Length: 620
Image 1 (cartoon, rainbow, N blue to C red):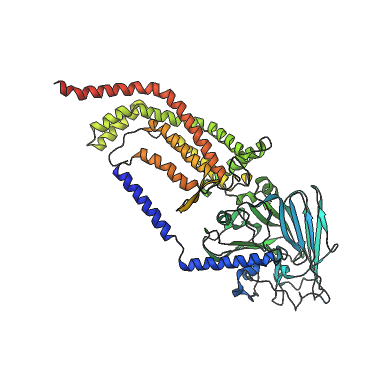
Image 2 (cartoon, one colour):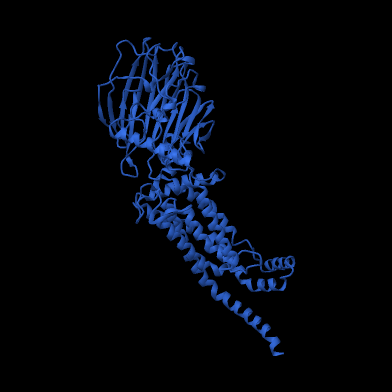
């Protein structure tokens, strides 16, 4: 290892240590984290006692008592506390004081618990998905009242939120209903107002999937609702489901689909903000890493409001990410708001059935290459895993076979690259001679080298171009395996969840950028890169020019860098690259066997000539 390389390693070490020191939280940040942890502990204690704090109350006592009297465009902050009207047109009718009741509907996919407080689903648990600690996925954070809210302003200026109203069921006081596929049931609630009007909520639950219908009927209230506009929202934050809260939080965001375009709303730093979009709205949603809820209106829509709050650094595990999405509907013609709801996984076929553009929320590639990534994911990758999972139940095996398939498809490009590298290798003796002859004249050396390429019909970038053409595929697969629910909680060998890191070795200390654990497939992947580097070294053994970095050293540094880069990524991603690298190494070995016999004699001849020239002065 030369002097410059040693200096480089020392500088890298200094930079890493400096980063570790500067990234340590300040005392103020530590205190904020301590307070946040205490608050979390307090909430947990309340929940253990059977007291479920409302989502709106989690924002802190400093905002208690806030209220708003503006329209949807500037309506009260969706995170503010609810207030139940006690006077005015929307106060409860005389003698209308129903007690809260709960009813449950189970399908093969969901268990929905309805509450008369707000007249809607207060709990939505998935029966076909679990959290990392093997509990049913719960989509609703605030289970004290309906997750869905209908909000509007009364003509008197009151801010009415149906989540704060106690409805009465239009069915038996309490029901328990199990639905099979193909069956459905309607759950209806009504609220009677002091002015003699009715608000009726009707939910239709099907046994076929994760979709619901929601219908809101206003009777006798035409003159009581300001501007005849209401907004509908999923008014509670989605619950994190993954062990790695940081990644789950980084995927959390809100979306609106309007004008055939999808717009994402995500805060990149701590704080609160909102985004308002006017015009016809296709749907609004919020999501975590693997799950989402969507509101798709049948009624004419006028605007959407996306609201978010991040309690600290978005990259910290204790940071809470809360997003809500509301859609404004015009009810002046029908006195009704009707919509389709989706509450479920970010699965391609489920979302495609709900809406053609719903899967656009899934991050399958960078925006500048989605023209390539989307078709590859939707029409090749997902169909492959969906079809063959019925034959081969283990997704680890499917990833290995997929790596073999991709390698076969890319074989012509890889072979073309290796042939170009072999052709360049044949010219190495002559290139070395030119480098020695014109070492004092770089321009002349470059000219003669280009003539040599032209004479032998060799493209100097022929070995790189085919590899560059593979990058869009590799980048797409990198994005797909990172966030695909297809491999979530699928195990292979020691990896319990292919969508999460397969930590294999715990360290007694933390390393900046790496952490205190090492992932097994990442270690094997780094080893496979070293093996591939060993095999390909002779194919690219160009002479090191003065002033140029030692490429061989750089090639061995690369596995070390990728170890840092991939360590906290999904195990399925590391497994795929491990398979791809092992296959590449095998392919390289086979090609080396075929080229060594042809190239070695030529190199030996040139070496003999060089020794003859060096020995001739001595004979004189």
